[in-house]
Image (cartoon, rainbow, N blue to C red; front, side, top):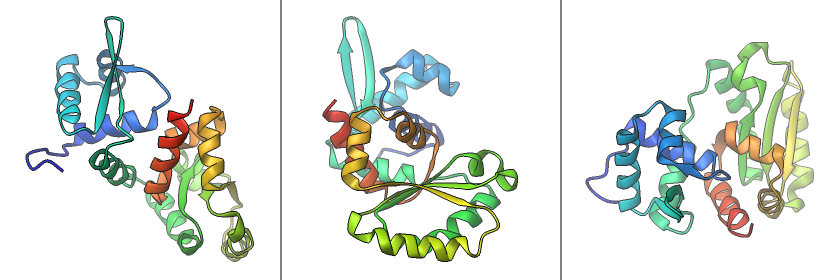
Length: 202
């Protein structure tokens, strides 16, 4: 990655926003308004991200829209790093740690739903798990063991890497909402690849 480029909090916010909202056409003004940044500040951040090939502009008429550069290696590495930066509550952190035995059997995990917004008042624990079909039995066994230790039910949304790619391509509302609002626990490279292929085939 370029030596003089600094991942400031606002740069991270902008890049995170673009990743999560990859389905939308996002202009400088839209990005600025939704993140509480001045148009000038948003423009400077976007220009800097463009210089290192982390994002690409799309010109339609007189308007310019920005999206993550899924094809650039440096951009993908930045995305993977940013996707793992989660500001989880202590309660959500505990749930994430309790799910860690699934890591060796799955490609990716995304915590989502009320566990992120309501903390200990959440009725259940929702998680997107991405794994190969051949590992279904092993994942179910691990989940059963984890569930036996939890007071609240764990609900999984299961996807193979190919399922995830197809869900993105078909604009599946549930999957897109999970990617937009969830907290990536592990496997950002799997998610980036799925978005890269799914979004580019639309």
